[in-house]
Image 1 (cartoon, one colour):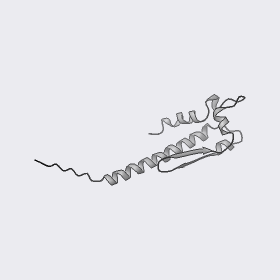
Image 2 (cartoon, helix red, strand yellow):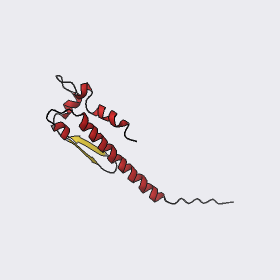
Image 3 (cartoon, one colour):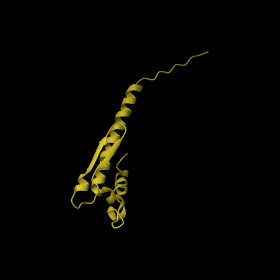
Image 4 (spheres, one colour):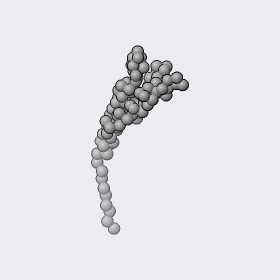
Length: 102
């Protein structure tokens, strides 16, 4: 009976390259989304637009805005439509980066 042996070399290097590539992608997407959110945030005083913060770790990116009224710019109130002609901030931002991220 014949024996077939296959050796694969370079898996550790390939794994490290994939990890680095994924981490770069997470940072890129997080940064692009923060920029888009800033551009779609309406400006009266500039406080909401300046309030966007982001951080990216190995596996995830987090974007936040601690301005208390930013949720109303996204969802509106009984007396006010959401920002961007009723579309909010997040939807238009996602749409704008969709073609940029590959």
